[in-house]
Amino acid sequence: MTSPSAVLVDLGPLQQLRAGRLPRRLTQLGLGLVVYGLSLALIIRGALGSAPWDVLHQGVAGRTPLSLGTVIVVVSVLVLLAWVPLRQRPGLGTVANALLVGVATDVFLALLGPLDGLLPRVLALLGGVLLNGLATAAYLGAQFGPGPRDGLMTGLARRTGRSVRSVRTALEVTVVLLGWLLGGTLGLGTVLYALAIGPLTQAALPWFTVRLDPPARGDGG
Image 1 (cartoon, rainbow, N blue to C red):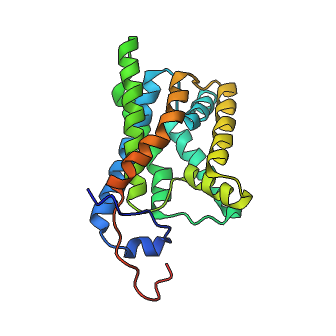
Image 2 (cartoon, rainbow, N blue to C red):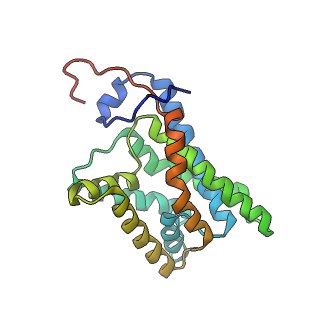
Image 3 (tube, helix red, strand yellow):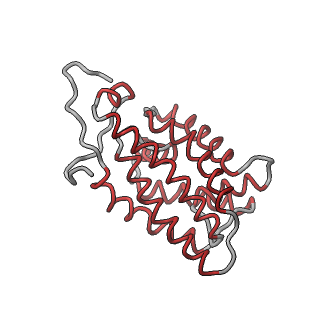
């Protein structure tokens, strides 16, 4: 892993490709997104409350013929469209996140199957939340841009002048309530995820953030 002094930077797609260490970064991005899908599947199989956005995804999936993973992809694309008026720049990781997380979630849901008993479900929830924090740090640390939902949050914060924390809270409360009304799973796991994911990601980021090469002179990205 890299030095804890490495920092996240905001780069355009071309700059991301020119920033060096591509094999390491691409591998970390791909693995991070796959593990992210695994973490969501574990939380869902725990059946003790889903992550805030997944409450919405479950609600929509329950009222359509679409799989949960397909709903995740569709919602990701719709969220990306909301970036346009916010003038956010999607990165390569943004697009990969939108397409791969939903597919990985469906694959792991099929492999895991429903869990019986409270202890296995609690362990699945705790393991899923922990893995989600690590996976988030991994794909962000690859320096290919944020996921669609994170970018929506930071874009709204920048345009409205509100803090990232207040915008995130407003977004997640909105999607949780909408998802719950549609039949999504709301519970202890939702609260645990909301409280733990920020600190877990922040703690893991220094160890996953890849130090980039200095930009070449005149590189506008």
